[in-house]
Length: 383
Image 1 (spheres, one colour):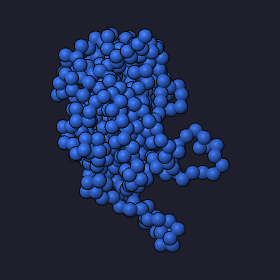
Image 2: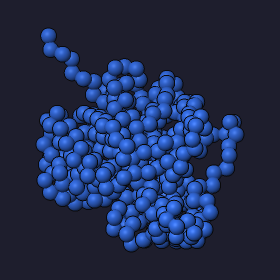
Image 3: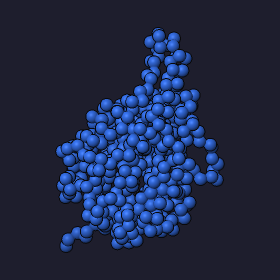
């Protein structure tokens, strides 16, 4: 007897929350310049003695040339640009108030629900995937579930920049095995809270945003695909991890229990950028190529690649490795210039903003890659 065909699952809506404040490269470079000059002056004797390394001044032109980033959105910019602070000003909220991440998640979710033709009451699972979880517990996903008036279950997960694609596979699995009928995947990334704005190599990389998706079994979907954004049937999902310390953040609840104090720069984002570039690009090319082969899709037949928005050169090299040529921005759209690296939200922002022009039957790949290393890909087809 033949095995039953897997249950068909579709992405029926997406949403995006963009903070109201934005920081240009010029503003960021000016802030870091003031900070570096003060630091080097305060530590002049140690720098002269060779016991402390001088900090390097930023280069505004280098930022865009090296990364493709022109600006980034943040939840609060005055604190980030304050040379004496260099992190957002976020008023402390009481337990009775909605958390910051839940607050930014709800507009994105509601936009996605409208596209899907659903309400919060239709949702029976919420998966929050993000690099930057606000707290240990209770899960912010459960707080969002409550605010939506949703039923079922909810949980938070963190797979760094691949949190969205890993969440999507978790949603697809839940829909196929019958443990949910309407799943919201939400990715609130307040990256400005964990970025190291004090060092030239890191200060320009990240921005804040939140994305959301609604996934349902195709047969249950209200969205028939006729709208501007369409319905996107999931042809396959593929995840992979490979341990590396080249992207790391050691902030955690055990820090206060450790015998020796850590360098504060260990408790925010850090990476060995050159090693990441050399190791991740071939890993992602192999992953996408293998996934396309598994779902019997030829690379030239893929109409669009919505890649993780970490670095323009990485995306170009990865797409070239899959296609055998450098893609144009229609084939691999870029939102880095406006949003910077929004961690797990990046590939979904690209999908959200650059899919309405595709036709029924067009194929696409949503792909993320980041710390871990972690790689996730979702192959979709417009209904």
